[in-house]
Amino acid sequence: GVQDALPMIMTGGSKTAQQAKKLKLVDQTCDPGQLLQCALATARLLNKGEMKLPKRGELPWMSAYFEDGIKSYSFLRDFYFGQARKMALKQTNGNYPAPIKIIEVLEGSIAKNALGKDQGYEMEADAFAELALTKESSGLRSLFFGQTSVKKNPFSGAMDVKKVGVLGAGLMGSGIAEVTIAKGVPVVLKDVSAKGLSVGETNIQKSMQDKVKKKRMTSFEKDVTMSRLIGVHNDMPSWKDHIKQCDLVVEAVFEDLSLKHKIVEEMESICKPDCIIATNTSSLPVSEIAKFSSRPHNIVGMHYFSPVPKMQLLEIIPHETTDEKVIATAVQLGLKQGKLPIVCKDVPGFFVNRCLGPYIDESMVLAFEVDDILKLDKALKKFGFPVGPMVLADEVGVDVAFHLHNNLIQDLGVRMSGANIEAMKAIKAAGIKGKRFGCGFLVYPPKKASGLAALNPFASKPSPTPNPVALEAMKPFMKPGKIDEEEISLRMSARFINEAIFCLQDGVIRSAQDGDVAAIFGVGFPPFTGGPVS
Image 1 (cartoon, rainbow, N blue to C red):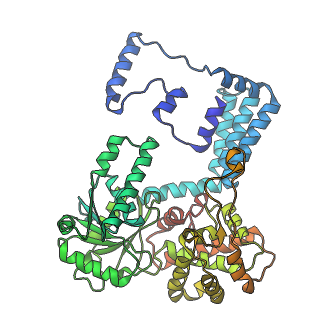
Image 2: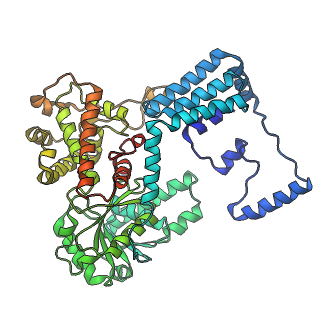
Image 3: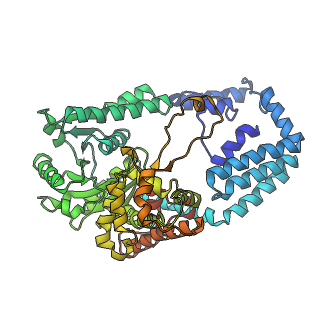
């Protein structure tokens, strides 16, 4: 019926075999291992006329009553599809024309009693042709081809990675280990202490258990996956024996250059000569990390994005003397992990953070020019970003955003010179650090409602509000003016796009497609645009 069909048509969402059978999309299900046998048995029974076909087209009485109502009464039809339009516009901010067109065609087909008839098919074909010519269709097709392109390894000589070492069992390290064991590659996860290792292993275990709960994997599959994880720490005499067996080691420790130098030196004394040492740095130059290495040709940057299990992008950063086979192996491992690997030049910020820097810089200019900092988030979400710049700064960490600014200003110069440095210092001095510290630009409501609000299923979800501490720190520097949403989105997106073009021009990325895919999957640049370079 319409109630079940409309969400599926609009989102393109998939259904499990059990859900599909319940919806009568399929007649029969079976164990995946018995698919061929069941199919053959069904074909034989059908051929002999011995199988009773299930009844199709019959709806439960409540659904049938609803279907008759929207077909017979225009006021019910107007109300139902009107609500569907409101929901679609809320979820897409009006940036995707397809959901609205789908509703229009379905509503029109029902009104004209044309469902499953030539007239209905003609309406659908006309709407499809119209949508195919939109700029949004062009942008999404470009993104699809870009994704397909980066899923092919352009480098030759990739080595077979049979075991991976991950140094550091924190959020990034445990995430890297999780996506690796999930694809069948054993991992040695090392931390300095048993306590740190335990936290990392618990994080992976919890993530796997969540998948079991959601029926994305079975308990048996979870146990098999976890069996590929070998946890070691400094107090275990055998940890070096395990690391020795690794073909590639990823360090995911603090962003401290001297610490990374020590790790490279230690790994080179333990690992086999052809072992690749990858650094998960987000800001330090890979060439500097490889500076005192005895085998610099084996060192490469592999910048994962947090949270690793959810973020598809992976930046691969070779330095000047990195071997091509090392780059090829890093790309191949990224593909095996289910990532979209983009090879970037070893410059400050690499690609995504290099583009993000000027974007955040402009937000720190606009924050002092608007009468309400929430306007920035509203404008950029309407433009198509998943989150606004104030939420992004809080999520990333205000200290990290300021560090990124200082790191890039030396290299980009005037392209990073918009924000008021004194104002940024005042914000930092006021203790504005970000969401995880409980003191960011915004104050966030609790995830779960309490009191009477928890009992009200129709209560609207409270939104973040400006932090009075942040507003007080910003007050001396405020110069509010009349700036509309269009100007905000134009100024901020232009800073991102401008830097993306500079990156293409300067060879920071290998192609326009790489830049588009990286921006969309790295920071959520609006997908319907095709990407900042497109």
